[in-house]
Length: 492
Image 1 (cartoon, one colour):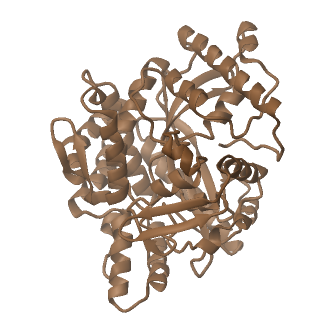
Image 2: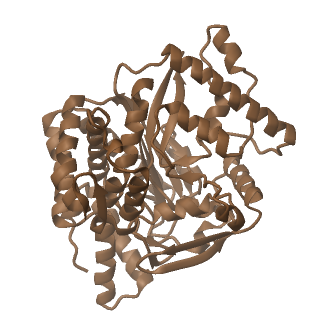
């Protein structure tokens, strides 16, 4: 939701005005899409990585304000809890040696930031879900100081009218209640941005939806929450539940959740923004003075702040982004599927797999989404999150097959083709997609390594909580060495 907001109380008039501004923004967007006023000549990409801060004992460290003050770099920002930070990597063209440059830049930034974190009693860990996180760590007192988090918490619980029931059935079962949205801070991800033209947006979004299950299966890295082994990518069900504004009765009525895979393939970016307005009441009805239609009539480019703010409180796994840079608007697909980690090189291998595959599928003469139902894509999404690298996924022409077989036989060649079309250097393409292939061959991704290591430690006589701490120490050491996770030692 990026935007800073002040704490405030919203009136009925605020909500009416906000709805009107959203509708006028949709009218303005219609005009802009028709007149093709967008920047899309270069395939620009962006990257966001969410990180955890832990102390020397591996416990969450609520020191993000101190760490950010010490880092003093605008690329690093607060996240929901005081034990989270986020790094925003500047956008760049996708081609040539962009991936090698990204790897060097991210590693240098993280190494420098980690040194500053040490000075404040913390360490940075890049993982989808901190395995040592316990219920006592996600109380409302742990929220970051930025007023937008407290305001969002108030609005979500006002809409629900009751505490949240968190229920996840996986290898083990979790059932508990939360009285704030702070458990959302357990979910740390990598977000991949791709700038596209209005004409191509629907194809890229549909392609991203179609491969989300494969992304999760190969990239899963979040098997533990509150001391329990749950899904291989527990981020997914936790995030779906902790930001849910619906009461049980509204769920039974079929009201759509705010964390949403979607329900159909789209034909335009307009479909997604229109769904946002049609299905979801505003959580933060804050209006700017500018009128988007009046701005268009005056020859100006509207920021459409209300449209963007509302979009930021609807948590699609592939989210449409409208933004203005300088005086030029553009559209992006924001891929929010992947967990953080296990290493920088693993995260960039995941990114290379995504960018290459989505390029090939989006430009195919017979699109994959014309050959499979949207429901099948959603089933793949949850299967990949639940079972990780052991998932079975559906794919047209193959039926239901192991995810590793699907990736090796069908998807990796397509990803190679897409990266070559983007102009990515052969050495980068071979190295990063080779990591994905080796994960499939060995059956080891971040979630598999974490779970197997904890099992080995427990088989050696260690209790679960000490085993999680011991595993995290090994994880952090391997993470900073930046060797791909499939090469990490697995013995306890």
